[in-house]
Image (tube, rainbow, N blue to C red; front, top):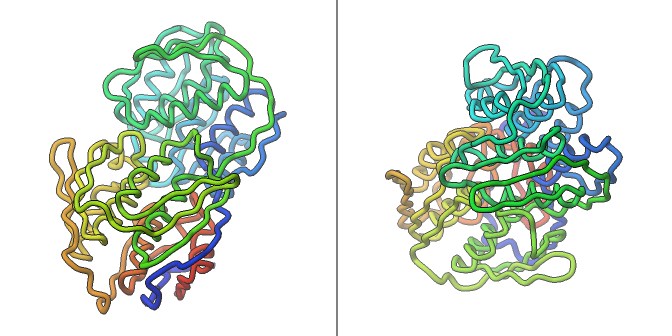
Length: 412
């Protein structure tokens, strides 16, 4: 079924009391699938994400054809480029029009330096590309920029122990999304691979992965939308199952951010409970370098709460599923908020007051996080979300879970 939009009529102002079995982590699932493939596919991977990107990764890892269509899955493109290149598989990797606009040159340059043969099929530095072969390791030490995408680094790190001489990876410049690199290394450790990380150099000796049993925890990125819903509710008690206090995921920082925006977090054995509390600030300062995927959620929440926000670390949002900075500027303007950009700093000037009688239609730009970040505004005014099925990319049950919380949207 092709749903064009979902409409909320602003007939509830709270999510009340609800328990949600939260979606599994796409980030952990996709890394685990690559690593498991490198140890023969003999692991027991439990609670894998139902996200479209994870289903696609599972399919493409075992696809015997020579053409690999990753569609709009950036992680899949970057991880499979490293995987096919350094396992010597000849594959043509392509994707959507937007995917062909997303840079991959930094990763390709690093893989070529290691010894992979890769050719661009259209524009240099961008997909589509072809992994032609890997005749042997040419370098044991590479340098790679850390301020563009941690996925380039993770792609290479996961392959490093399989190289005949291992690899030293020197990360240059500011490290964006460091928790995602730590997640990758942590998962590699779970599969028996050791490493050292001193200053800017990660060293991984040659060694073999060992199959294991891994239970994938719930997704902290998905949890962030529930934090936003609680923050915008008049009252709320939301229990999210499957989240871990000591998580690999950098987006667990949402607990700290949202505390000042009126959400208390209480951990228990099988997850956590969120409770609506009082707003504690009228201006939020936050560096999103370690959690850029929270940017849309937090800025939208602040805009609706009347809280100014000064954000740093959002550079990578320009090269995501859409240009998320431009998308936020367009959509938040519809509720009277402004997102101003200065070199390295983004300043949100919130809406003075939301008008609950004025209906707003939001575009989603083929971006799952735009849809889910904007959805909590349904607690404040009538909204319509266009192309709501984009949430399948990471959280297929999102709209169903909202309905459990009392936000029943009408689909068109």
